[in-house]
Length: 187
Ligand SMILES: [Zn+2]
Image (cartoon, rainbow, N blue to C red; front, side):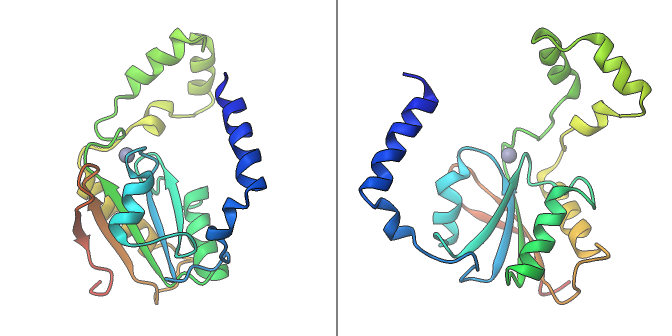
């Protein structure tokens, strides 16, 4: 059976059996914070358990690497929405060890794209259009520096309230142990 069919079959039972009842909550976070973290599969359940947050407690924004790559991209917009519309009063940026974005080489990913039918011509067209695909796909070298950079981007964003503490942490994807990189109360 295909993945999607499995999901839809499960979903039908889930709703029919009212399994959703235990998750009922509101869109406003009980713990008044928003977390930016990585989409890594190991963090899906581990991170909330390791931080003692459950359904309804926090807003979570995820992407590859927990990066704020652009000051006016969708990650930054999500954080601003969480703060100004959804009662998040603190921001936590949580990177992790052994991240897929750590040391990611754009050349390898571009090779993979070519193998799957993306033509050299398409890449050249993008380059001639002034799009730096290599720079865009580049990962980071050091997770602590990357977290610190994202915290700095959020802290210094012209639309972010100065009253919002922005913390930076790194989580171990095996044990859930958190290391503090930046304490937002002190900056
Ligand atoms: Zn990651």
